Amino acid sequence: MTHRITLERNTLRFAAAHFTTSGGECEPLHGHNYDVMVTIEGELTADAWVVDFTEAKRLIAGVCKELDHRFLLALDSPSLAIARRDGAYEVAFGERRYVIPESDVAPLPIDNSTAERLAEWLAGRIARELAARGASNLTRITVGVEEAPGQAGWYTLAPPWPPAPEQ
Image (cartoon, rainbow, N blue to C red; front, side, top):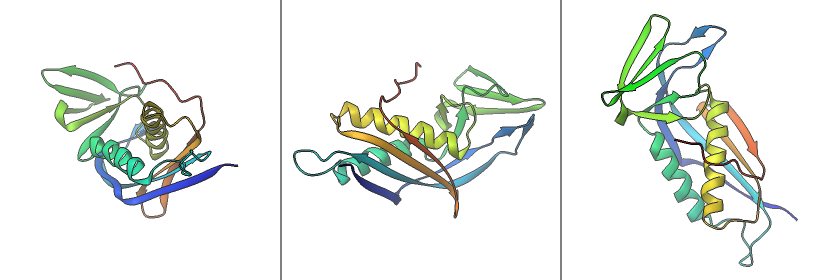
């Protein structure tokens, strides 16, 4: 029988800037106060839990902190020209150009910084981190990324967990 735990909001949030591309257009640079919701499913351990709440919250909050107050850069975007030089990222879309210090950027191996892709990236990252900590009992991880109240992108991941992206 599968059990699940859920973790939501409160400490699972981050504020970040981004823009998305769609249909040959690029929206203006803007930001969100993102809330993250996570459901972790699996068989109970010998101690009768799926994952310790405290451990899972600490892990997820740590990943959120990596994104907090950063520009979310979709490194795999086919629409953006991205160069890294002199301690900064230069990001171009057509005539628009942004130069952002590396320390202000969260470079992500995604093709667009939509809520759906952020949820997918977070699910993979959480799955890999939990597996590295020995959580072999998990069967699904679902992540929701809410960029505005009532507006969230979701992704569900099942094993085998994706490998860590190459840097």
